[in-house]
Image (cartoon, rainbow, N blue to C red; front, side, top):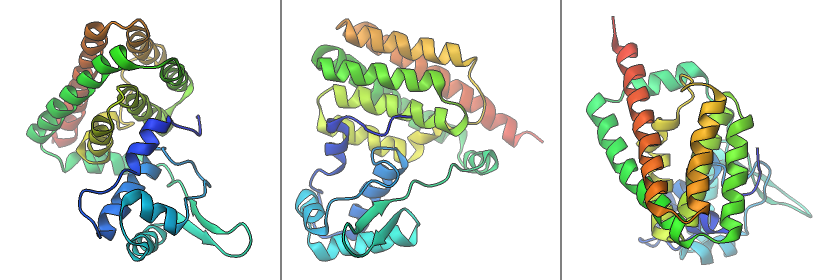
Length: 247
């Protein structure tokens, strides 16, 4: 898997917070950045002062957030020369834990989240086709290759990173943050590594087609392909959900 993500996606994670002085909000942003792969394992975080300036909060707030991250095992602090706070990517959860998480969600909630995600991802794909730079296209191609080679939980992360790259290519920080928020909440359920949706080649072909439409500047096709892709994910997840509830 690639270690880096687009500058736009990372910048969206470190945008100033709407509400100042909330350690929980800083913690949530950083948890999202780590679990979604925007920050790589062992990557050093900016200093407390730099994080405070980026988020628009006090250093005390940042310090409280880092304490919470250390308690969750997502950050470790090293002392001495070359020290600081470093990312610890969480281990991939077992299939059993994913299934239990899915079992607790209602079918209507899955559909509602899917509808919301459909609107965000479809709009992002269309705007990406209209606004993306050559660098954005290159990152989308790399993200597509990750999907071709990844398996299991890594395939799920590759899927999520692909859609983050599409949102970043739309050149809309607000839209990128919406994508991140959806993925970190219920939207992440869409890409759980529960059941394969066809062969790896099929998954690769779907994302390859979306990336190609964006590269060609065909916004309507990019939106259409993205919406079809997500609708299939919703239907697949609903089937798995019903199987889990069956006696």
